[in-house]
Length: 355
Image (cartoon, rainbow, N blue to C red; front, side, top):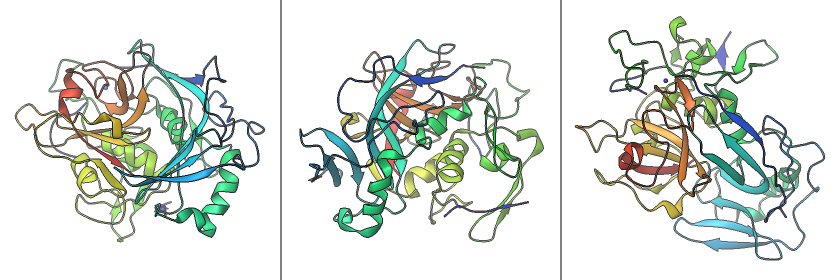
């Protein structure tokens, strides 16, 4: 599933230091935790003794459409988990966490959604399969960080470094890209250069399944642009396959437009052209969201992020690596990180994909 290490791009870019805090909400008892009362630690991982050994014995499976999906219900009708046909993203209901970034936004996101990656893409009837029954037994007691917790391990504000057993730094403060000396305004999208992929952040060569090999640039160590960050998160850390082109292939391609068009999973908001996407009710936490933000190319997708849910003002907020914040941010430097309304990124919102 995960490629093994040995041992981007054109258009405008998006970096200034921010601070991210992923912590436990003060109120963890408000609604919907029958699936397993996950107790997040300061890094968003679940406490070792925070949940029951399995879901409520009265749970049922319900089929819904648009998109086709299977929802696990508790005995009282509450949603315990959602699995979308063709996608590996699983959204479980757990204990609330609050994510904030006070240096770039006053907004906070408090969510009971825990986003995990299934070993196989979901299909109707998969709840009867042996692989899923085994996964289901373990999921409520899973103590590892979920997708959101892992994403915030790269906060451009100064997330602590994490190393693997070989001493490779696999997490910690991420930035967007090298300084572009031709641009003077730090809020300009091109102030920091794009084209930094996940292997640049890692500083290690990478061999892809097709045998192609990528070498990191020393000047880009610790950097990831918008799509590079999603590849670092979903590919390198969460195990979704990666390839090294912008064409169709197994797994995540390189650039934002290619992930939108050819990525795994399924489109939940198709890209229809130049108009702002407004069907936000179909979104669920963890969905990739795509933007066309070049003024004279309103139909060309050149930025991507991850939807993290409603903020404390009821606005739809996303998390992405951007130049003005100098890396991963949920903040509002040089455009609010919002999908709804008439602000810069909202006007450029075009599509969404569930991996």
